[in-house]
Amino acid sequence: MLTKPQLDTMLAMVRLAEKFEPMAEQEAAQLQRKSDAELVDILKRIDDRIVELAHDYARELVAGGAG
Image (cartoon, rainbow, N blue to C red):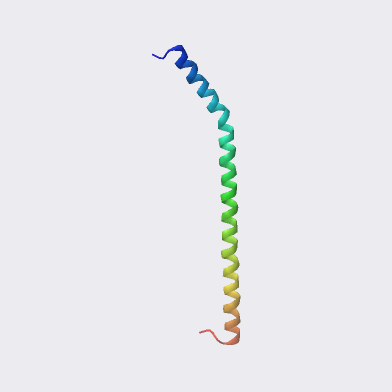
């Protein structure tokens, strides 16, 4: 069985955790947005490179150099 001081300490810790929970959720959401933005940037660069390679290949086909 817990003593009154132990219970008071435990209750104080629970209250403190409740106060920090919204901040932790906000931080997690912020990190997710940053991660999403980084992924968008990577995928855009990949897409740009694919388009560039496709254009180069099309020019080779038109010039008769492919195949």
